[in-house]
Structures are given as C-alpha cells and as structure tokens.
Image (cartoon, rainbow over all chains, first blue to last red; front, side):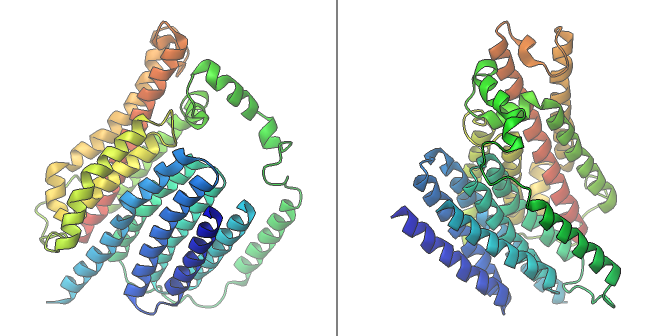
Length: 87
Length: 323
C-alpha cells in the first residue's frame, strides 16, 4: 500500500512540475512549487515507512515547518514590486 | 522499487535543470531552482543519506529561495539575450560531458560492497564509532570528530562567505542612516501573519532539537543553524526589516558567527592545553568516551551558531540593499 501511495505521489510531482514548466502565470508557478513542497513532505513520510526508517520522519517535519517560508518570500517580493511601481 | 523512484526523480531533476538553463525569465528560474532543491532532497533521502537530505531541506526549502529573490529584487526580471553562440565553449562542454560519460562506465554499481569507497576508511569508522564515541549517528561522528579538521575548515568557509557578501553589498551593520522606504512586511495580511506567528516558535524549537539530537538522529549544527535562521527570516518577512533588526541587530549576527568559529577553534586549543592534540576531544573528561561526546556537542554548537549568523547576515545584507 505504501508503494502505491509513493507512486501516486511521484506522479503528482510530475504533474506539478509540468505546471511549473508551462506556467503561464506567476501564480501557476508559485502554486506548483508549493505543491511540489507538500508532495516532497508526503513522499519522505511514505518512503520512511516503506523502508522502515521511521526515525527519518524528522525530515518530513523539517519540510512541513519551513516549506512555506519560500512562498511567503515570493509574496513579499511581488508586494514590494507592486509598491515600487505605484508612484 | 528504490530504482524506480530513483530513475523517476532523477528524470524530473534533469528536466528541471534543462528548463532552468533554457528560461530567460529569472523569476521562473528561481522558482525552478526551488523545485530542483526539493527533488534533490527527495533523491538524497531515497539514497538513505538522511543528514544530507536534511541539510538540503533546511537550506533549500527556505533560505535559498529567499536570498535568490532578494537578489532578483536588485536586478531586472529578464536575462539579457547573449549574442552569438560561443562555439569554443560548446565544444569544451561537449568534450567534457563525453569524457565524464565514458568515465561512468568504470564506475562500480550503486551500493556495490566491493566499491573502493566502501573499502577505504568507511569500515573503520563504522567499527570504531561505537567504541570511541558511543553515539548511533556515524555521520556526526565522522563530521565532528574523525574529520573535525575538515569541518573546522568549512566553518571558516562560511565565515569568509559572510565577510565576502558583506563587503560586496556594503553591509555596514545598518549604520548608514535610516532606511528610506518603510518596509511593512506582510503583517497586514491576516493569514500569513497568523500562520507565521503560530509556526515561528515551533521552527525554533525544531532547530534546537536538530542541534542537540544530532548524535542520535539526522541533523547537527549545519542543519540546525539553517533551520533557526529560516525561522528568524520568517520573522523578518512577517514583521518587516526594521522590526527584525531591532530584535536581532546586525552586530549580534556577526558576533554570533565569530563566536561560533572561535568556539570551534577554542575547543581545539583547549584540547591542546589539556595535553592532547588539536581537536582530540578525549582529554576533555577523565573518561575519553564522555570527553569525545562533550567535544562533539561543543563544536556542533559552534557550527550551528556560525551557520545561523552567516545566513542571517547575508539575508539582511540583501534586504538592506533593497530599501
């Protein structure tokens, strides 16, 4: 069952990568990055159980905690750019 | 199964790398670089290199994207078209690639126990770590004790990197007068604010866990320093540049790097004063095994402080330049 889950996650990662490559908009890409982040977290968790290394769940935890910082940085980047364009 | 995962993830990695080279839009390149880092971490994890995967997670998931975006804010969004194709460069690259591909034919199979890398010092490390240090994570033992000189060198590389960035970007610790544009951060946006404030203490706590649990699980000073730095960068993104610099002044970050590097070197000197050789921790305690454990914890702390301070300094140097 873990194998099936891992394969499904890999396929989802592939689809998210397609969206990141094709775009077309900024938000498509931001969402794709965010989605790949969540899928990586899930993949690490599933593989950790698949191979019986539950200790390595720490890594999935690390991703779960700090993944969105990059997305916040993107939002701040566009906020600053929009403010710079205003006057 | 592991082969299928590996092939799939490596193919995605190659596609992403080609796309990064091909795109002219630098923002897209930054986003693809973030994806590259995620895929790389998943690859490391599948190869059972948990410590490296955690480093990639800690640095790639947050800090790299933030710093690349800060750099992007200082430049144009699109790459300039370069002129004609430089045929000599193409030829050099093509020849190198062919030589490298030819070299892989002699490479031993993945995980082959007879491969040279598994015959050299690795068996000795695996055998002696329980005897010398009595800690389960051999990676930490190798990094902090057996090859402590290398890690000391790496800490000074981090130190030099920070000094270099501060020189280039003119980071003078925020003494160049008031910042002209007020930076509101994201605190006017409800969801980032609430989620960020909720997660911040847990990120710091997790960083401390990785720092002090490095001998038992994946992790150690490098990863912990990067995670804590990510937490403080999150604070800076939410509350704005000035508020973050008020809580952790630029001088404090630079002092942290110097203190971390000095702590590492100081442990080495302390070992010499106690009659051992440089970074021979066994003299730190009457029981050599406990002495080595004390030494590892002390130098991991030094590494963590240096990495955290350096990443924060680099981030703030870019951010100060932006405003």
